[in-house]
Structures are given as C-alpha cells and as structure tokens.
Image (cartoon, rainbow, N blue to C red; front, side, top):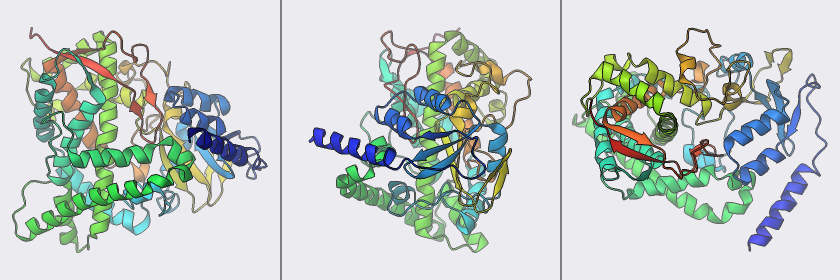
Length: 484
C-alpha cells in the first residue's frame, strides 16, 4: 500500500513541477528570482529541521529581499525585507486583504472567518469587539494562579526529563480557557489529557500535516473523522457561548473573560453577534493564544537550559524585583521592570518565530514596493523567518543573544515581526508577552532546569516544519531551587 502511495506521489510531483514548467514571470519582475516550490515541498515532506528550510529558501532566492515562488502554476510574491514588509503590512485592510480560504479547505473548516482570516465588515466589527475585551482580560494574577497549578504538575515530575512543550501547552490551554471562556479544562490536574483537548489536538495535527497540504487528495479518506472531530469541538464551543448568553441575561455572570466581554459590548453597541462568528473567533483566539505562546515559552526555557549563565542572570533580575520567595505572583507594575526577561522573550520570538510565514495577502490595488509594482490579485506573503535571520539587520542572526535587545542601537521597526504589524497586527500580542513574563519569572524563582545529557536538542533546537512550528522531543529536567 505504501509503495502505491509513494509512486502516486512521485507521479503528481512530476506532473505538477515538470510538465507545468513553462511559467513566465509577471511583467516588470524579470530580474526577480523565481524559485520552484519543489525543493521546499520535498524538505517539508522529509520533515527537515526548519532552519534547514530557511537556509534553503535563502540559497534558492540568492538572499534577495523580494523573490517569487511557485507551486505548479501558482506564483507568490515573497517579502524578506523590513522595508518591503512595512509597505505591505501598513496597507489598508481593503487594499491588501487576507487571502480568502476555500470553504472546502481544512483551514476554513476549522478556523472559519475568525479575525486572522476574515476581511471587510466582518473583520472590522469583531476587531472592534475583541480589542477592549482583550484589554479587560490582561490579568497577571490569573496567569500567576495558573502557574501555581503548573508548579503542582511539575512537582510530580521533578528530577526527571519532561516534555516541556507539552507542559507549556497544558499551561497555556488553562490560561486561555480562563481568558477566553472562563472555563477550566483541568490540563494541570493530572497527566491524563482531557477528552476535548485530545479532540482539539487531533484536529490541529490534521491541519498542520505537510502531506495534507502538498497532497490533499491523499488524505481525503480521513475527512470523515476530521469533520466529526470539528463537530464535537464545535458543540463544546457552542455550549459555552449559549451558557454565557444565558448568564448575561440572568445577570449571573462573573469575571471578564473574552467571550463575556464581547457579548456585553455587542449588546451595548447594538451588534448582533452571530453564534457561528463567535465560534470562529473563540477557535482562533484559542489556537493563536496558546499554541504560539507555548512555543515561545519552550524556546526560552530551552536556551536558558543551554546557557546556564543566562538563566542565572534572568533569575537575579527576578529576585531583585520580586524578592526570593517562591510562589510570588508578579503584578503589572513589576512586570514592566523585567528588562532582561523581556529581552529573552523577544530574542526567542526572533530566532524561532512560531509562525514563520505571518501573512498571506491578495491585492485589490497595485502597490509599489521598491522598484516593483505589485499588480492587482498578486498573492503576497511576509516571511518572518527570513526577515529575522537577515544578516543585514541582525548581527550573527543564528546566534541566540538577548543582549541585542538591551543595547541602545536603533533597529528597523519591521525587522522584528513575530506578531505581524500594521492594522492586522496580532490582537493578543500584549497578552502573550505578559503571560510569558509571568510564567518565566515564577519558574525562575521556583526551579533550576537543565537539558538531559542525551538530549537530541543538545547542539541545536530541532523544529518540525509545520504551519505552526513545533520543537522535536524537547525535554528538560527541573529541580527545586535552593534559596540563597
């Protein structure tokens, strides 16, 4: 069976990339490199480490800050320059909207028309509702309380390797449950994963599968299971929405979770909050809010384990601000004083941005970028990985160095774009940064952590090439810190 599938794959590759090879560059782009997506797709299918894919793209494009790529007959404009990224990302959302997802595609089936994918009036309406809702939800205390639950979970696994990405996922899921829905999943109560989270993880694993994206027809046989999983997860979300609506009607609601705030504001503004659209927003907040944050936290923990001197410097800053008592919850004012912790987080997001390609746009009007005029209907993307590793803007870009964010050297404002920028910048950016500061600072007070001697990540961090990057088998050993 495997042999037949492999043979079919080879036939499709030959057809798509060799028999459909006569592709002409758009007029005015004759000097812009046009690279085939075949080597990159092959690297994805072989699950090469993402830094190798980034190097491959840079080699194929000759290091150009604007290049074209193609899959079959489809051409995309790739932007790898802060200057060019600024032009695209600061465009009006009407001039450069997000590319529409096809209703039959796996992304649309799960993410729907949530903020990262919607355009026009839908985007404007729900962005208006979500912005103050996020501001109301900025609660370091809530994150700190969840971190105490994390400590209880870690205590059961002290002095032995634990999968730090999974643990960070459990933690950020709990934070997002409280933030988005006012709901407790119980991910930190035991090592057993709650059923609805198992359903969610199956959905995400299906969506990020490189085989599904390169050869969607191969996995059609599993669509039934995939759609059933979405239906079950939707039922969970719809029940929460209806419960919140009933609580608001009876004036029994408590707290300021995102969903409650959006429902209340919608009522105040006379906006009819469609339950399907609310479902789409909650799903997108949930995925973007915990998956990317857990990835960033895992990166920071990895490098602090790899470089103990950085861990000690970070711990010294935390002790100076919070004192030396474990289980201390930082408040908003104290968080603002974390200069080195902030630099660590920013460097982690630079060197390994969780979403390496941050935006897909399809132009409604021509845009001038440098000497080029991008035509109407041009498909454009900003490659955050290439920008973050561009030696023109970052000295020794492959080196992990938080100090680069502590010097007074002025940096291009669009050379660091892990949350995108402009009108479509990530709505949860401030919350994610706050959450990371709270969790990291509290962990530094409570624990030391190291890499196991036989870690496959000992020399460098291995990252699975997916829609959202994932560390490969990243284990750390936590030990209780001796106060001194």
